[in-house]
Image (cartoon, rainbow over all chains, first blue to last red; front, top):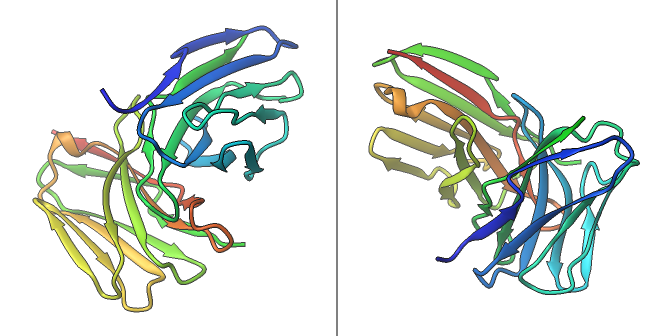
Length: 112
Length: 112
C-alpha cells in the first residue's frame, strides 16, 4: 500500500525526556511536513523539508528538531525544551508547489 | 505574513439543514484546497480550486473560489451525520509554494 506511516500512534513521555516520532512515505513525494494540532484547534506548521538534507522552520519550531537524510523519511524529535508538548502530531507529504498534501494518521503525544 | 482565516469556528446544525464555511486570505492565492478531518482522524484532501470564479461540486458539496482569488467557500446541502468533522481551507505560502497555510477550520456537528 502506498501512503504515509507514522509511529507510534500513542506515546507517553516523562517531563525532561526527548522523544522521536517516525514518519515514512512511499509516495515518492519531494516535500514533507510536520504539523501540530491541539484539541479543537487548527494545524500549526513545525518544520518542513522540500529536499533531502534540507529543511526549514515553520511557525512553531522551538523545542523541536528534524532531519531529512532520506527522501522517504522525516523524523521529528520533541525535545525537553518544548514546554507544552502534549498534542496530536501530523506528518504530511506532497510533490512540489502547492499540490495536494497527504497526511499520515497522526501520533498522539502525552507528557506524564 | 500571509493569513488564512475561516468562519465560523463552530457550526451546529440539524440534519437536513445546509451549512457554509468561508475562507478568507490576506493575499491572492494561486489555488485553494479544502480538507476534511473526521473526529479523531487526520485531514483528508477534498478538492483544489485554481481558476478565478471557479465552482466545483462533489455530490452535496459545492466549492467556490471567488474572482479576486482571496476568498473561498464550502457549502453543504442537506447535511447528514456523515458530514460531521472539521473543514479546513489551505493556500500556498507567499514565499514557498510547497508550504501550505491552513485556516483554523470550521468544526461542524450535525444533530440527527
